[in-house]
Image (cartoon, rainbow, N blue to C red; front, side, top):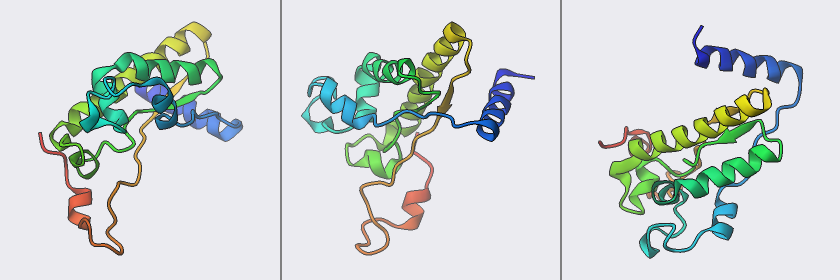
Length: 151
């Protein structure tokens, strides 16, 4: 079996037998640790996904702090990494790149901690609501929310 299948089965086994600890907020810690320059300039302020592109070491540091504190699952830095969410920053054309980079950084840290501790660590994709609403304001359509990212 490949590593992905083994990791998935280990997660299912863990979830059936005990409480599994997941990390906490990425955004709050980035606001404490980042300058405007880390975001790539004021036009990207409050875009944690852009910190991933400009300073992946900071994202890795947040993951590391959660893993050192005992988290077994870390979430990718992709809370707002959808075409609709990234359009607010003019980054809707980079959604695929951002999601791949976030998964890579998180996977590398999870693998490092799995190897060094002998205890399996997992990565979960993170996806938040968006800054748009389809229910009341009509700010976005369902089709726009479910469309694939531009490449």
